[in-house]
Image 1 (spheres, each protein chain N blue to C red):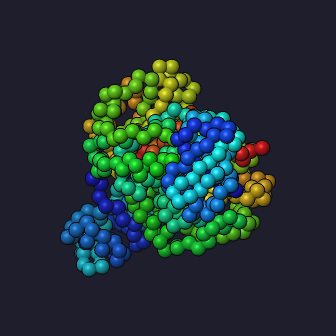
Image 2: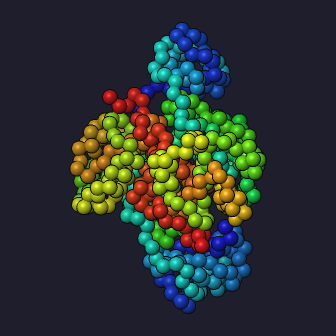
Image 3: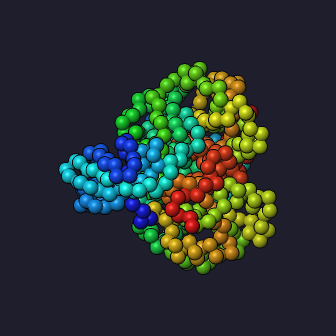
Length: 256
Length: 256
């Protein structure tokens, strides 16, 4: 509430520096927010923290800011990847937005046997990522990878990362217990984490069988209800942040 | 995957009983699923468990089932209420769907100072509730209350229920820690739970101050990012189910 408009920019940020807005940002400031020039905005670029800046020049499809003062130091989100099977448009947009809000660092679409949606509009998803980051006061934008077959993604799996498999079938400990145990007894060889959720139709039995036998996979259960793909992802991310992530931190500017 | 179509009905369910479908269900079976009659469906009514039934007669806007055999005994969802400030249409629909998937037992829209949306299309939301319950394999439909001013809702607050306040401002312990502590040391006078989330603009300072001082309110933090209203609700529900709810259970029919 009542905080300044936050915008993601790619230019460097430092005292007195001029920064060019993207054309869509200029349009937004001029035509939606009805800015005239001189207004305060907050800028971040994923590297230099968050800065107070002022609208210096505002024209049709162009805006320039002058950076004034640093408000917050750069902070990176927890190192948490989300591997997910792409789903239909509205739910995909939703999943992306929620994954940003829930603090993922990297989004990796994977194509499984039952994945219905193989093409991903990267430009639109990228715009969603940025908008969600601006809105939730993150200081970084998660990376979005190109879609890759699940097998290929697993073949090149990094040796330092565990993969939480949201398994709706077969035996699996509850996610809360599994992550609390991992917090109590960390695996020094695999300090980093990722979450994997399937497509609307779920993983095939063969996929689940393969996944279960990989040394870096941790199958977990998400309770008795059959969750939609995006709900499973959000649930796993929310519980992970609560148990192993930054759930203990508070929002900036809102706590005395 | 490959399970029969699940439908919510209001009639009683028992062996050999005839059950009438609603007109929209008949339309769906005939025109979307292209049923001809004789197909198996699974029926539930929130009281009698889940039953296998067969499509007996199928006409324009009419369908009748004959109930065959019980598949699952009735099971009620955990006693968890969600109090939330209504939000705009698409996000409201989404919130309702996710709350059903995440196992709430009762939805109570509350009007706060910054709530922008005061009217709620109960008929549409009710249809969403039912569809989400059919899809996620719940055996009950959460109750949906009419919107009520937050003050009025708090005035008549039941003495046996704690209210988790998702507080983006001010001091608050992380939700995971707060609920783990409540699990370790239950309050015998207040065994039941509710979650309260605010509107897009958040609670006012005065509302937060009032809420904090109520004996049944437990303020919690949801991490450093500013979550949208529906994301805050989903996060709190997911963590609650994981720590205090039925997160330890597994989906039916999917675990040997």
